[in-house]
Image: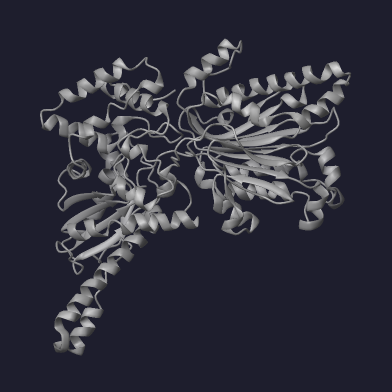
Length: 631
């Protein structure tokens, strides 16, 4: 993605099912859990660049000893800084102490059986350490302490916040993270109190009641009650002070979660390859957490995957497949290749099947896998052309001509490379734009001046600003006859509201193209009519709201919007002709059949809150407000 956007947090949770001494004997270190957590976060570092946090809980600690430890960092080298701060506690220990798991557990923080890690990629708010997960809800009762970390965004924070107020709470801020923490915390308190009230009349001491709560606290019931009105995409991980743990996934499966368990360990992560690599596992060993379900690990080691919400139609985020998740997952790798391959016919038609005078490349590096798919498709098409030429010549085909035909191949080159980020230190706009153009550099001497067409594959185009300000400008220095920009993702037309920083309509180049087309075709009145329909629904129940922006796009066919985008991203005075080709939504669904959450492209939101968000984002655009479409 040449246009950078913020997106997708990452989580990692580990529960050690054996005593700490077991791991020391088998793996040679008392810090096995801590080391594995660090590796899980490191392998998912693509999911967070604003900070990181981790927490541990020790089981069966005597009263008076600290059993919860938490550390967070927003340093530029946040992961290194986080674990340097943690390991600082062990720096001056003797070899005997370092090799005594029980002593470490009794005397040092971060040596526990439950570990939770988080990588933050903030979609809003500030980037201070207080915004980093895990969030902690403290209480003097061990069963009421709660740590929560997640990859989520809720569309109905206002509604949930008001419920908390009506319950008598006084939340310290209105954010989805605090709201989730307090919502789960409220029902945790309620469940603990219910059990205490149930057992106390039978003559049990308070300590004995605690033991009964440990055993009988119904996490499934707790999560059912807490998440009843959640609208959004989420994976929420939680640790409870006495030792229960859970990971809850949204009913549409929008946000990803995978887990593995054996007799030693339970581990959960946002990405499957992270678990595979860190624990040396086969792909078949790892399970995907079902939508609407929670993975629950009780203090006594019982593990279950249970339904907490009625599942909706699967709408797993397709952007995970296109860009966000690391491409070393087998399925994602093959899907990205297929996205590129499917563009073959469109690309060949645009270059008039002229392999001799077309150079194929990609930008940025995240588009490389899709480029491999495109090249496979081009090679297959060229093989058909070769076969046809050979069959037509028949017996008249001479060796030198055959050799010439067989030598035909697509011209694949590495032409556009990202250079070091430019720091301009310049105030005036003209100078700054000139500097920004040099974010990318090119390989000279490969493209034949004014004869070759340059095809550049990108994995997605959001705003188009990098194309306009940098890529096309610098690529035009190669003096091609034509530049064809190819996106392996469809046109991004609608805002996200489930955790990705794409919430303002004016930032989408596809929406800007739509607005210009409406104005050019004397249809600007449709914008105002859509605005009135959005305003009329503004205070309706979210279940009754319809997406009023979709009808505007229906006024123009897909290629017309693509052509207008090409005009928008073309710098003024640029010499080569610029064309833009997009993947279709149908093509995306074909390439990623099990991950069909395509609301950014289609406007078909998987939860009712999505329609409220798109209409609000449109209202903000029409009223000139630079605000997100959700709270």
